[in-house]
Length: 117
Image 1 (spheres, helix red, strand yellow):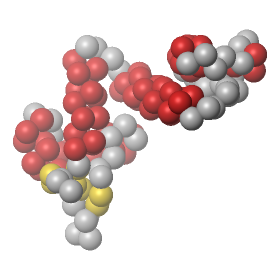
Image 2 (cartoon, helix red, strand yellow):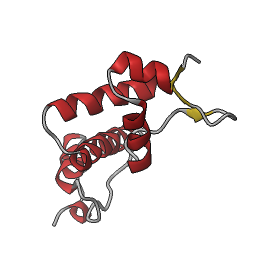
Image 3 (cartoon, rainbow, N blue to C red):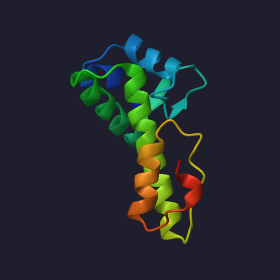
């Protein structure tokens, strides 16, 4: 697996290592692994996520909003994956991104009354 150190990622992305550590601390970008020496290493998936974070940040979104957008994307992918395996619905009433979850369920023809208000 290809991976890059925190210093390499910082240099290539134009953010500081402090920013990358902050993103880890608030939970929007975790390193792929942490070495025995404590160094953070990032794989391809983490770099794609960083690219999305930087794009959304450039568009003016707050970090809390970026976290919600990225989490909603993950939720969408999970719901669509479940739908493709015959999942028939979910109770999404507890989710902050309920409209998105409901739209995904409708899109896949797996709408249930428990997902509506």
